[in-house]
Amino acid sequence: MPELAKAELRELDAEMKNEINRDKWTKVQFNPDTLKVTYANQIKEPSGSGDQRGAQAQQFVGAGTTKLAVQLYFDVTQDLGQGLPDVIDVRKLTQRVTYFITPLGDPPNNPKKFKPPMTRLAWGSFQFDGIVEAMEETLDLFSFEGRPLRASVTMTISQQKITTFTFNDAAEPPGVQRGNRPAAGTQPQTAAPQGSNLQSMAAAQPGGAPGGDWQSVAAANGIENPRILQPGQLIDFSLQASVQIE
Image (tube, rainbow, N blue to C red):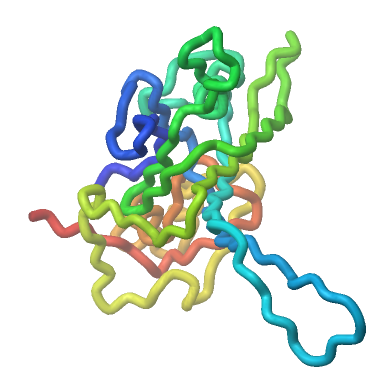
């Protein structure tokens, strides 16, 4: 099976052309569920007096913006992997994300020169460049000693222009062939019970998973962590992905 592509935050130079400071890059622990991109223009209604009938022309008064909203999850009770440090406090992971919103001084004695680093979110063929405009961190699981173990981080990355998507073709993953099998979601699906994992669910299916290969079922259904399923998560066991080896 091909290695699962992970979203990654990378630092760019001031011109937003070259990737720099590789030691500051950080991969996410769990890929986001959604990426929300918003486009906006600055529009001004014309001023006037009296009773004006009919539609009034709107005036474009400034460059538009493109914003990306994404939510990332971290949990030190799970196997970290992906090059993330082995830590017992989830803030050791989220501080790697906080770096991308922390203003950097150049020179340090001039506060007006402070600005956050240019940031790129890269995930497979998806790529978005901009400045981290806002970040919200929620800690929602604590140890007996009061250490935060789980966190969600909501980020907004903005660009001061309307820009089309950038496709990172170099990151295109190996092709996945389904043959004549239907797409996920078009066949009857099985809901995951509380505390279940894909391997045990596949073994409980009549005849087991197709070919006994629960890993392929995970790939075909886009399941990132087969060992931990969300209660009620729908799985189509009729699917089995096969990877074409070049």
